[in-house]
Length: 144
Image 1 (cartoon, helix red, strand yellow):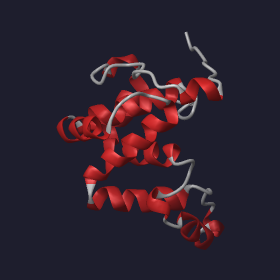
Image 2 (image 1 turned 90 degrees about the horizontal axis):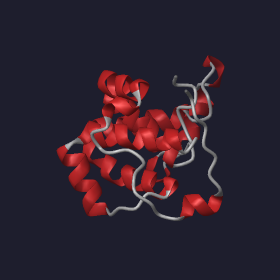
Image 3 (image 1 turned 90 degrees about the vertical axis):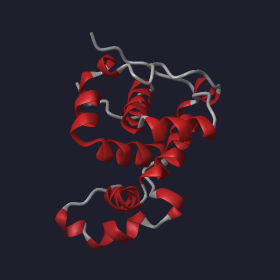
Image 4 (image 1 turned 180 degrees about the vertical axis):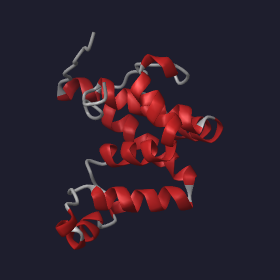
């Protein structure tokens, strides 16, 4: 059974714990398959969604997209390319992106906790963030 949840702005600004545990891999099979198949791609998608389809650190992702419009690039493709380059060069950057996900979804936590989670169990943390974004209806709605 597919459940859809709608959250008011007030509910999203209140902090609460994650809706799933860090190791609750089998709570969402599509996210598990995406995370195991290409955890780095899932991390990049989480970061772009958390930043409202913008590239990390205010980088101009739209400049890349403008050059590739003829090929059918979507508006956030430039942000995905830039974040992928950043992530491939410096994977611990996901600590900062996890903080953005927490802020966007209203999840309680701290930067030191994000550092421990991403350094010790990187892909588990990435999949937990994806499940959280999906549970709030912010992303991955078409993953069945």
